[in-house]
Image (tube, rainbow, N blue to C red; front, side):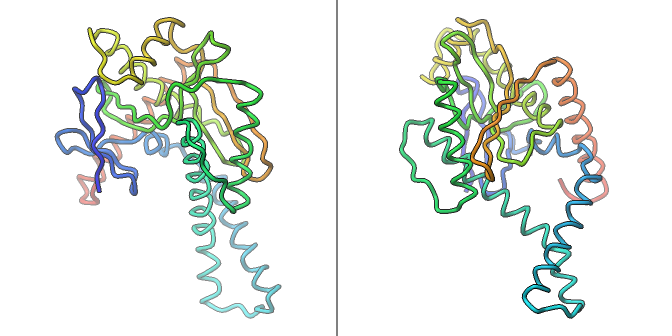
Length: 272
């Protein structure tokens, strides 16, 4: 079922499919997401090695079970093992994000039994205890009218009661270079909407008003930041991002390339 998202003081209505993570504008046109745009960055060199590694682990595990006969069926299953691992990691990341979001919203979510999820969740209170931030929003849909894309921003925080940070949560093993471009995608769209709201006489949404008031008071966002919550270690890592303008341009380049690839794909009859 599609959700309707109201933005820009109620002047923009988006449709969102939570299960497929897809957005449409008020005219029914599909929108490129932030993560889809940065997905054009080539990661094949690393992924090829990882896929081969997962296949090898699967075959070794089968051998330990006593199944050392190489069959076509076994090889076929081994070739698909990376998909299972990838889907499992995505589910863990989603569970961690959901728990953190519920906590920020003032609820008291239970910690799941899954060890990896529990580790990531445990890392968040450690971060909160050390940094003592006040969260102004969590899981906020952002949309750029100017550039025509959408995404879900993990959070905006008030730090030391003196500056604002735009934050992206990760549960991956590391913090990779292309992640900073994702943060820029959220940053560009969020700033665009805030600048629109600053021109309005009345802001309808109470949370938007609190965000805009803080934005005015503290002179905008002081930083973009990635917060990684370790699903293996239970520790957290903070990465403050500099060179915002360069990263913004890099994200928009990804967006432009993704849009052109979709145009070509549509023209060839491959669908959107």
